[in-house]
Each structure stands twice: as C-alpha cells, then as structure tokens.
Image (cartoon, rainbow, N blue to C red; front, side):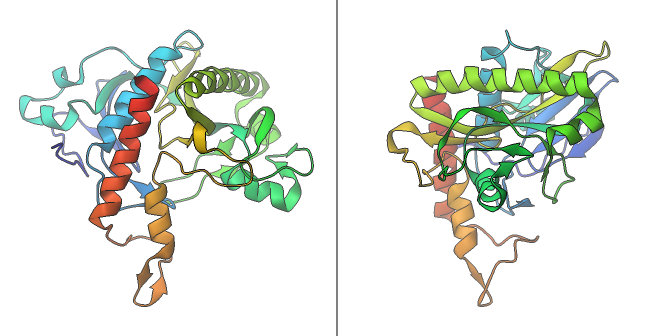
Amino acid sequence: MTTAILDTTIKSLPLISKGKVRDIYAIGSDRLLMITTDRLSAFDVVMQDPIPGKGIVLNQMSNFWFDYLATIIPNHLTGVTPELVVSPDEIAQVSGRAVVTQRLEPILVEAVVRGYLAGSAWKDYQVSGMICGLNLPKGLQNAQKLSEPIFTPAAKAAVGDHDENISFDLMVAQVGLELAQQIRTVSIALYQSAATYAATKGILIADTKFEFGLNPAGHLVLMDEVLTADSSRFWPKDSYEIGKNPPSYDKQFVRDWLEAVQIDGQAWNKKSPAPKLPQDIIQKTAQKYEEAYRLLTQ
C-alpha cells in the first residue's frame, strides 16, 4: 500500500513554497523540484488527513496531459529524473509524485475554460446572466453544455483565500492585451483538444483551469498541473443530464461530508482547522481519483 505523504521534508534543496497540494524546492537558479503531496483541500482549507496515493495519481495525470498537448504549447517539464536531484534517503518522497521543471515567471491569472455551466459560473449566471463580464443566452440550465467554450479568468489568491473571477478587460489591465489574447486562445485550444479526447473515454470535462509562465526569452509556457481531478470538473458521460449536477471524479465525497458534518452541534464554518475525515470518505475519494486516471489513460 502507498505510504501517504502529507508534508515533505527535503533537506538537500532549499524550500521555496508549500501550496495547498504541492511543495516546491529550488534546484539552482533555473529549475524547480515540484512534489505533489497527498494533501487535499476543500473550500480552500487543507484537510488534516491525506488521501493515500492522490499525489502520485495527480502527477501521472498531469504528465499524461502535458505529453498529449505538447503540440499546442511548450510546457515546463525538463525531463530530468527527480530521484537524481535529491539525496538517497529522500527518494521515497519524490518517487512517482515529483517533476523537475523550468523556473518560470508565473502569470498571476488562472486561465479558466468552461464548456458547461456549473459551479460558481452557474451561481453567477443565476444572479446576473453573466460570467466574468460575458453575457450568456437566457434560459440556460445547471450543467448545460455551452454553444462553445468560454474563457473566464480568475485572479490567483493566496493559500486559504478564494480565487476571484475577473473580466477579460481586467486581465488585460494586469498582463497586457497581447499576452491576454494569447493565453485565451491557447487555453481554449487546450480545452477543446482535451475535451474531445476525454469524451472518447466516457468523461466530460465541464471546466478546467490552466496556469502559465514566461521563460527567460519571454515565451509563454504551460506550467503547474494540467487537467487533473483537482483542477478540472470531470463528469461521467453516461450519467450526464441537463439540470442536475453529475457525480464528479474528484473530492465531491469530501465536500458533501463536510457540508453535512456537525461539530459541537453546529455546521463546520469552513475555516481551518478542518474536521478529521472518516476512513470511508478517504477511501472513496482515493478510488475516484484513481478511476479518472485509469479511464483517461487506458
């Protein structure tokens, strides 16, 4: 059985940051070691309990998509074996769950692409008929497929805070018109390619988010994670129905349990610390991540 990793303790390299899921270490001045732990966050709070094997599944899924989409845009992978950049006693912390990447200048906007009306987009649409400044047709239903994918950027927030949906005009103000247009065009192309492929495997990609950086030459590069069950909403094609939220291949078991749990007779306030997860919720969540990876890559 896979040993779960909640936190890494690499001493041979300097730690740069610990995110909700990934720990990042510096390799010299131009490369990074990115380790995907088994941490899980819900409602922007990191759970106390790891999901065994989740980090390995996410890392493998990202690597699959980086390879599949490489003809559309370069990515941050260097091809260097992670086990070679740490000391021998640290190999277990990186094996199967880490990559060595280029060190890029991150663009602090999440490139969200939506092919279906779901989640926060559905909530915004119900209130205003708009998403990130985009007017949508009247009468759309929850989970309905859009006539074409839409680009709805979000401003990246610090760990523990919520990302904020922003308009394309505000993104232009932050990064410039040319770069904003390039990110929008590339993001939609990535989504369309992945969604077409996933549909042949019985999975609908309702929405996803991409992250980009600039290399020293100023060229756009795809980075971080791509099309995982953490960054995307995956729905089973065979149970999809307009007007209903399909069961998704992600941490929905955890979200549902957290919404229902009572702590001292009251609902959890969705602030840290999170309540301890029951073992069956942990197991079901791990199985969902593994199932999505198996279906997409088999």
